[in-house]
Length: 330
Image (cartoon, rainbow, N blue to C red; front, side, top):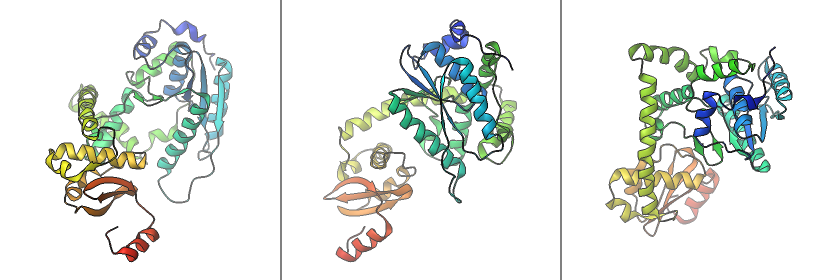
């Protein structure tokens, strides 16, 4: 196994120059790196050391694969050679039913964000341009929302994605240049998950149809994110810092803007995305001045005295009791 070189020697690396130009990593600002041991997160770890200096690696061992403990040992050995502190989390077994990938993602990001706050660090993840394309394609085929074509932002609050301008081939080359060793996840080659099929079957076909297809998707997403900032400003202007809006005002606005406002309010009420709210805009706009409408993903549109806002959907028992108590729509 090759030894990693001194991270300071990578300062003139062309990939480091591009990452530094993004401005997401700042010298001296602590960074918690989500580190799986794969090539992308290994590249990210080394790049963060080179640019920021103050780095901690964060690894989650779910214990669900035969290779999980070997992956953890690899991460520990790499961090020891690099002189990086490693924080390992071993969550409780997942629920017997439900989406395993969604559970793993929720655990990974939830625990990483909590530790980053404790350390007063930004949280860095190793998403690349390839991941961006896969995300856009997946969302396009699974959701009709505007969010589908926006892709991932370089920064979401305290979470940063410094590698979004690099391809997977470039992170591989970076690791090879700096003598960094990584481990590949064998499950990425299977077809059990939709994302794997997009990566291994759909994208190669798209490249055959047009060699610039992936870059065109990335360019489109970047432009739409810029335009999205303009739309967000319009929503901000209408809401003026509030968490509700007069129903009559919404009805006078263009439907496209009303959809954006309603989606923003629903997301804010849940503290996370509430997919599908915008598609129900016309139903919400047709509500009376005292009404409620339960929407997907645990959010409820509530109109009181002609003003619409959103709340998390109450438990079923609470809803039944409320209906019995006053006869109003709940």
